Amino acid sequence: MSESERSLTPPPVNLETEAFWQAAGRGELVLKRCTACAKTHYYPRAICPFCQSSETEWYAASGQGTIYSYSVMRRAAIPYVIAYVTLAEGITMMTNIVDCDADRLTIGQPVSVTFKPAENGQAIPMFRPA
Amino acid sequence: MSFNTKAYIAGVYEHPTRRADDKTLAQLHAEVAIGALGDAGLAMADVDGYFCAGDAPGLGGLSMAEYLGLDVRLIDTTETGGSSYVIHVGHAAEAIAAGQCSVALITLAGRPKAEGMATGTAPRPQSGDAPDVGFEQVFGPTVVNMYAMAAMRHMHEYGTTSEQLAWIKVAASTHAQHNERAVLRNVVTVEEVVNSPIIADPLHRLDCCVISDGGGAVVMVSPEIAKSLGHRSVKLLGHGEAIKHLAGGQVDLTYTGARWSGPRAFEDAGLAPADIDYVSIYDSFTITVLETLEDLGFCEKGKGGAFVADGNLIAGVGKLPFNTDGGGLCNNHPANRGGMTKVIEAVRQLRGEAHPKVQVANCELALAHGTGGSIGTRMGSATVIMGRNDA
Image (cartoon, rainbow over all chains, first blue to last red; front, side, top):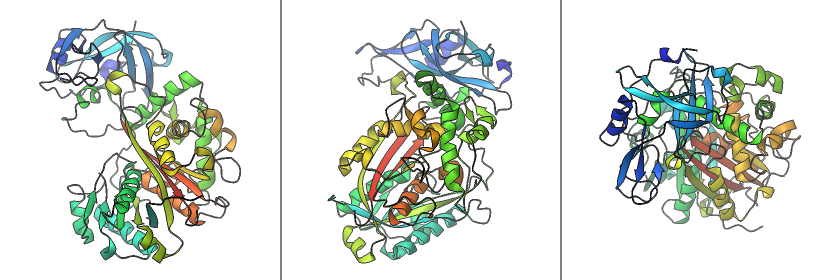
C-alpha cells in the first residue's frame, strides 16, 4: 500500500514544540532530555515529567528503533499502519510505519526514521523497516 | 460479613431507546433522571447533589442542572470518558458519607447513532491545546486502532489469540439474546467473531461494542434515606479510581488502570476477587475486558485468554458471570460511554432483577468497572464494589 497517498493533517505547533518540528524539517528527529535528572521523556515538554525541572534540552536522536506494537487500519479510505516504536534512546513514540508491506510487519522489527510531508509541507517523522 | 456502608444506590434506569432520532440530548438526560428517581421512589426536588460528565450539553453541569430544575449543594462533573459514571458513584458515596449531600443524581445520555457519528473509525476532534495532540493526531489514531495496538502487544507478550478474545463476545451475546432491548440479540460463535471483517488488526468488527443512543441514570442516597425506601437499595461497599497514561514515553499497553483502581476498591470494601458473584466489566472491545479481568485479579496477568475461554463468563455455565444484559458488546453502549450501564446491570443482579435466564443465584456481591479514554494512550479507570441490601 502506498502510505504517501494518505493526506496528513498538519500537527498544531506551539512555542513548546516548534524546535521539534523545525528539526523534522531538516530531516532530524530530536528528543528532549532533562539536564537535572538525565532522563529523556516523550512527547517533548518544557518541564520534565519525572522531576519537574524546567532545565530540559533538545538532542538529536539516532533515528533507530524497533516496533513495540502496530495495527493496520484497514477500515479507512486509504489503509495505513499506526504504531508505537521504541527508540534506541529508550522512549516509545506513536508513529506510522511506511514504505513497507503492512502484512509483513512484526513486533520487535528494527525500523529507522523517515519523514513524510503533511498537507502544509511540514515534515512528519515516521518509520520504515530498517 | 459486616460492612461500613457509606451510601446506597436506591434507583437506576436504563433508557429503553437505542436510537433517539426523536429526542434531544437534554431531553434524554431528563428522561433517565426521572426514570431513576421514580425507581428510587424519590422526586427531583429531593436531589441535592448532581453528577454528570462530558456528554452533558453546556458548561459542565450547569445547563443540565438548569434544564432539570435542580437545586443542589454539590456538583461534580469529573470527566474520564466512559468511566466517569463509575467514578461518580464513588465520589457520591464519599460526599454522602461526609454529609455534603444526601440524594445524589448521576446522569448520562447521548445520540451518536442519530447524529451519524463514525465512532470507532474516524479521529475524534481534539483541542489543539492538549499537549499530546501534536504528537499523535497526525498519525491517525482512532478508537479502534488504538485498542487494537493493545491487543497486538498482549498477543505478542502472552500468546493471547483472537479465538480467546472472541469468547468474550460469545458470552455477551449469549446473555443479550434474553434482552429485548439489546442492539445485537443473535448468539454468535467464536468462528463468526473471527470471520467478521477486520477493522484494525487484530480487532474484528465483532470484537467491538455497539454504537447506541440513549443513556442511564443512578440515584444514590444516605443509609438513613435508604432505610426509609425499602430493600431494593444496594450497598456501595468500596471504590477506587486511577489514571494510566503513557508515562513520559515508558509505554506498556498490556495492562490498564484497573491494576490500581481494583485493589483500591477491594481494600476499601475489605473484599477480594474470590468474593465477587457477578462482574460488569467495561466492554468497549473484547481486549478491554480481557486486560481488565487480569488487572482486577480475577486471573494472573497474561492468563486472561485462558480465563475467558470456553464460556467462563457465561451465566449458569462459567465461573464468573459477566455483563448479563449483553454489555456494550451486544446490548447498549450509549453515547459511546459504557460505565453507567455497567453499574446498572450490577444493581439489577444484586436486586435479583436481572433476566431469570442470566440471574446469578444468591448474588450478594458485585463489581462494576469502567475504562474511559483509551487503553492505547491515556485512560481513567474506576472500580466499584456493591453488595445486596442485606449483605
